[in-house]
Length: 169
Image (cartoon, rainbow, N blue to C red):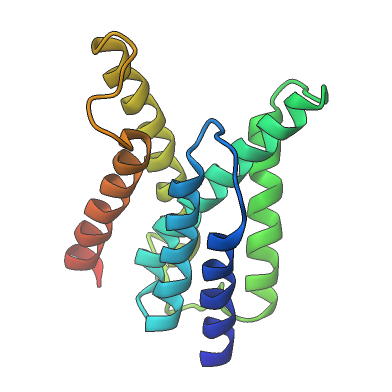
């Protein structure tokens, strides 16, 4: 298990060396979330916490993918949702086959802790996009603080990580 965690952690750090262009969700935010996922697994943090970060990463990646496809004139109805589902399947099917997902004792409200908190992570990251847009709108289409687009999802994920930790772990 430790070697898998090291691979995830090193892969996440490798993302830092990839040059990114600005998209709907900030690349720095995505790299920070990916690093957070790798670090959580490496440190043995509960699946309920790391799942929040997995969900944030999956939504961020799906938005990037949708923007890429749209840029190359390959956009279709419900593409954002379908891409997100594909990323969920690509992520969770291997986790299920590796035995990381699906333990009977690793459930909350009848759902696997990692899957449950990943869905919450998607929701929080999605909400952060609306919060960022709302803040920009009330400030005449300018950000209040530098890297606002990065800070909002990170704050939400960190706050809910603490809430989940102190409530369920």
